Length: 193
Image (cartoon, rainbow, N blue to C red; front, side):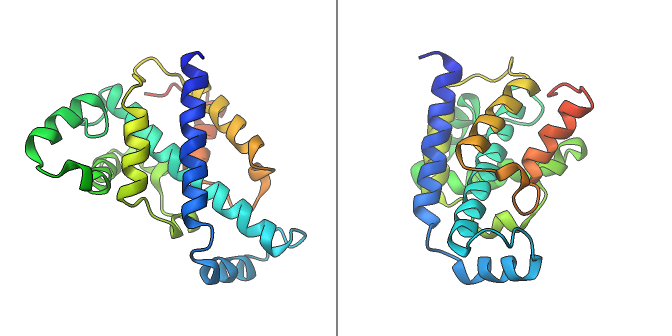
């Protein structure tokens, strides 16, 4: 299995875990979002929820991946990569219970950089949150990868594969901020930092 296949496999596992964890949570909120939006009325209610949580899972997955990429490319101070975790392991006694807090700090750092902020814009997909269990799961999966050479085209291909595996997410409901960010970079032929 090459590195891209291994990465895709790890991302799929996280997405499946996210969906399994939140499948029955926030149904009332999602029902209101669906009714208020009036979008995708031709999709059954059950399928709508399934597509919504899948798109939310991919958006969250991509946000964490982008943070790790930006850290590996030295755009922000490391927190979620190997260097960052060595630092945090020395400072925090119960690091296994602090993954979500480290993720939140990494997210705050990202939001200080204006050209990256758009990928992390709040959206309806943030009705679900990255708790310690999810943060620990994905961060530990991504620690083995070094993304200093990854390109925007690589990330775009990952998105396309994940979106295709979960149905027609590209046209479902509203755009995902993290995916929109990558799509804009592709359209403008910009590099990923």
